Image (cartoon, rainbow, N blue to C red; front, side, top):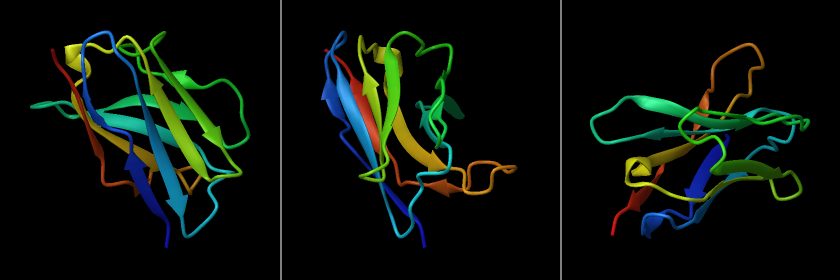
Length: 119
């Protein structure tokens, strides 16, 4: 049974940085796309970033392009989200997800980690 556990969330001032981690256990996810999503207060969950298992160019949501970077360390079965130049509107619960069925939607989700950007 795959488990995804996010960490690294917290309170940060506008303009600051945070790095989120997503550690997978129960199964190696090295060959699968991994992604980050977020749910802002009162909003639906939205796409943040994704990275393929085999590498390649990551993809980002428009609101985070140029500020966030997704990466993965397959040796550690871990995916990261480096968030720079954070804004108050980045405040959200951030979720890690894996797509173990290549033709289906993201089907494995973590429990989420809270990121709050406030002065």
